[in-house]
Image (cartoon, rainbow, N blue to C red; front, side, top):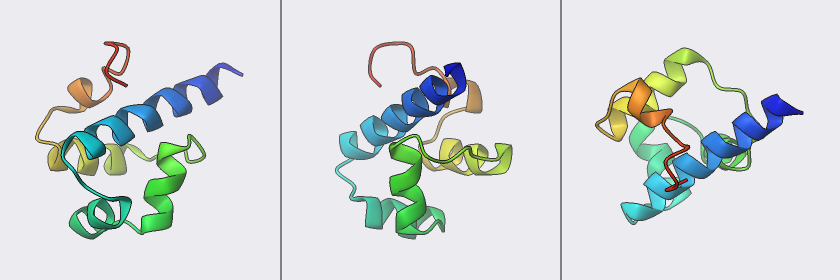
Length: 76
């Protein structure tokens, strides 16, 4: 299903950004206010995030929402 592919690609993007900063899922959760299990579900493509939560992650990674969603660049 195409939507599943989108969620999986976004999850890989988040995992890449998190690990590039040397953060655990627990630390990312603490710093964003999300629960650790929610971060894991995002990274596995199991959660369909709200726009507000996407904005929270973009702010945390110091990028625009469009930059965060640019997961086709190959670094996801």
